Image (cartoon, rainbow over all chains, first blue to last red):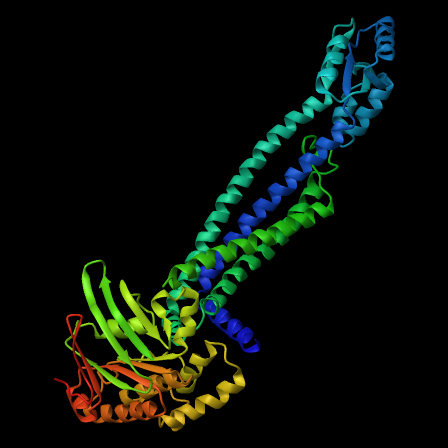
Length: 298
Length: 225
């Protein structure tokens, strides 16, 4: 067995050196495609995480008309207290709304200075007892018809719209990644075929003296695996960088109201890296396996 | 050792390379295959190591019907059959001893065995002094000796030679024939396709003549024609 290992290392190494440009191209393509797949996976996980987060805390925002009278506000408040569909109500008067406003826009003092508490609508923040969209919508409709109510906003509905557009974008990233994986398989196939061609005399002799097909195939499959795994390694670094970049630029950044909801935990980054290596190895093995089998078919 | 039973080989569905060939070759025999170009000599040899499959008939090598042999067992058949060609088929990037060792490495023989067997066989073919030369530093006759060493290093039961002297001058050819004769005397069955009248006439071994795919003569201690 020892002789086999150094034989494989020697043959694989010389193939890699001989086809440097092709090898380089296929490793890069593998890396780019796997990085896209990983990014898409992380964003997908992030959407699911944010979706779950919102589901447990579906909120209705009932904004009162700034000119609403105290009676109208009390009437809405009573209606909410009596409604069985409401689990929890939080009233934001003008002062409280202004505090929140100042906090949300603390990086834009110019904006804050132009607004006074009087300009802000008072609102009820409602946590419904059921997260069923129909129940929530029915509750919202009842409240919207009350006097003095400016409008009702659905936090979940808004989030769902964001999710939908991010998902569409994500699907396209995944499709591009998939197409590039296809290109990777073809590139590896081509690289290995070139290597097989360069060594056709050796292969001919090996077949004549009775080398088994597995033995002839081994160095080439090892080479394809090397392409896939090295590409995966590069993609893993890219995924790690993407993770860091996303966290720094979007997560907990108020300015990105849509994207800051999308976040994933370290375990999900690790599974993304696991997927990268699995798909990379598979890509290399398929590309090289097909290339060698075609040549060896007797 | 070798038995062909009504073997027919057709290329591309129309060109008949071998037609109803029936012949038996015993262990330790030395057999010449003669005939014009295209008469089926090479096909005969290629059928014996399963580079080709017959359309009809059975081929027995060491008791096994190799026409029915599944693909994954073919390498093990070939480990018992050495092959020598007119164009040597040496690897130009490997030295003489590496070329011979390659045949053993390729079938996974242990390194210790290779270290021992390669110098031995190079001694046998008279090239011990050239072990570290590259093939292109050798004469044609020497290159053919290397190729014979490679074919015989695993001590196969059968040696197939397809015009091994085709590229060599008569004096060099005599040396190669002496080597093949020596290998035959160790009990190895040798089947050699040739156009070389002088060699066939001087060796006086069994001669099988092919004509357009048919066996037209099978003669013990025969001559070229």
